[in-house]
Image 1: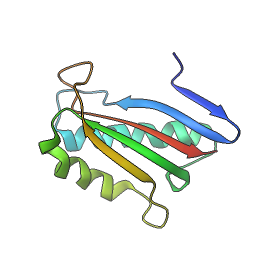
Image 2: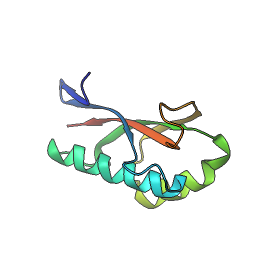
Image 3: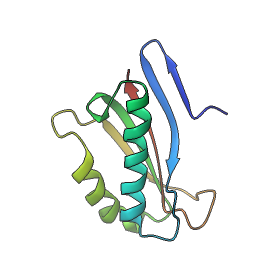
Image 4: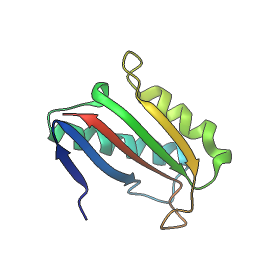
Amino acid sequence: MSEMVIHNGTIYLSGQIAEDGSTTVEAQTRDVLRQIDARLAEQGSDKSRLLTATVFLADIATFAQMNAAWDEWVDRANPPTRATVEAKLADPALLVEILVVAAA
C-alpha cells in the first residue's frame, strides 16, 4: 500500500494518524496536520494547494475539538472541500485520521 501517490500533478495522501494515541483529539489533530504539512512539503506543495480533505473521527462528539485545531491550521484564503464522518479507526487509541488530495 502506498502512503502517497502523485498522478497528473495531483497528490493523493493516504489517511494520516497521530504518532501518540494517548493524547486528546485536538492534540492528535495537530499532530496529523503537522504530518500532512511535512508530506506535502516533500513534493513541493503545501496546505494552500489542498483540494479536498476527509476527516474520520472515532467519536463525532469530538468534532468541535478537532475543528478548533483544523481552523487554526487551514489556509483561510484557499480552504479545501472537506467531509467529516464518524468511523471506527484501526486502533481504539486513535481519535482522528485525515486524508487529503492536493495539487502538486
